[in-house]
Image 1 (spheres, each protein chain N blue to C red):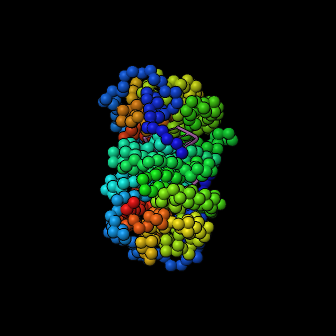
Image 2 (image 1 turned 135 degrees about the vertical axis):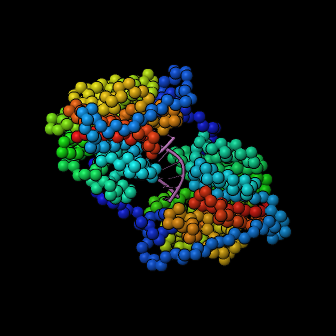
Image 3 (image 1 turned 120 degrees about the vertical axis):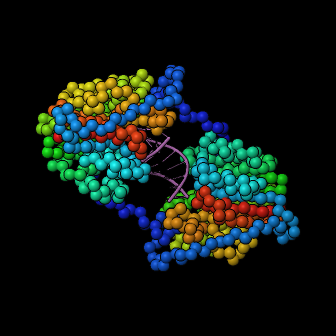
Length: 310
Length: 310
DNA sequence: CCTGGCATG
DNA sequence: CATGGCAGG
């Protein structure tokens, strides 16, 4: 029992756009009134070598599958109608999945991974129109495979890997773990790549270069834009993989896939490009297009779609 | 990471209407389709001795003041316009109170009690149009005064005590504590009553007799209708106090002030009378009316109002 | 079935 | 400022 006065807590993070810790209070000017939007161009269904795309893959960090279903995320999916739908941050044990998604006839082959320990944390899913040859969970390393972060599906001509990469956390409390993850995940992908080329998609929880987020200056010490995480992604690409969006649109600014719910970031397009399609180099000739579907609502991330001939 | 099938958890508590544990699966027939409602009769503003009511007091367990404010509970209060408004289960530290209530000009004298330890738990409030002579918190016993459960206001001719009595909990885990509370609280009221007569109001967390809840049979082992709690209330009345509603309407059935949110209890009027105005016997001649405002929404309890000449 | 907190992002 | 889980009712 106590007596006090009015609140005035929050309002600490002003010029910070992840929701991460350590706000920098140094910037003076506000964001411009008119947001600089990225207009996703019309889909290109033909690749350089002239082949037509025969596969469409969509990846979406749904930030809670149950809430996302309630916000009609599945209507968008039906409209987009990809051959494979990869979801991250489902935050849902398999027994609690909404019937609206488990009973979806368009995707008879559904695969779910969720956190062993923490309920409602992490979790990824893959829904397929055609049945993969084989599906596996995790990357084969005990320490990384308890949080439902990776599903790998083998298709006739490629592997499809979807992942929700561990966030380094506020105050970078989990950056050390992330660095271990990056090393081991890269090793896992390189191993796979020896067998068949692969498509990696999902929330990689890193904006690679300054062009990949609105406020690079203010975020160098924040989760998702530390030099450790950025170098981790660089090393991945140096292992023989390509960031398909940046390959196609090397100069495109203001193209983001994530906006924190805080501070009306999305309406101002103060965002980050955290979601990717990363391809084995040998798949590059078949790359048709990589789309950022930033009009789709229902999460703090938007979906991305890949058109490819495989 | 695990794989399973569809959910079928809940649906355990069927014929239980507190949300308490130990559901009895024995009843066969369902509740009638047409709910038996209690129609609160028109207010009686004149008491037996012919005096006009000069005081109106309203008591409401709001089940979270912030949510209740958002659901426009204050609009109802402005309409009812009591001289004193007593609230229980505010679940809100004083520093987090909505401005809509702290700045309410109709009630310049506002008193708040909240839990010392558990944030967002328990808590009562008293809002007055006229300033009380003195206001105190708790009952003067350390062990009971940490959860913000009692405010006592001294007025010229009476004390007004509002309380949120400890719930005995699912599985009656806190029944022993409750019994201690009942003894000590009764002693506190008896002490006060020596000085001046008193009005006690609030959520007493007990349905006194079978008439005071829809399903007496099924709830004898549940919090709010155990013999211990019922006898505690009987002993309070035997200490020289009167349940004003039952005094006025001794045979009135289906008159409840609480309905669990579960199982659509309110629409079926499967409820409990847990909220009371209890009066020192010497105030009985001034008792005009005790109203159950069961049309007011915004909580799992409804407000009750007392008209009295003091 | 609701509340308010909490951890997490 | 969202999510989902939790204790409490």
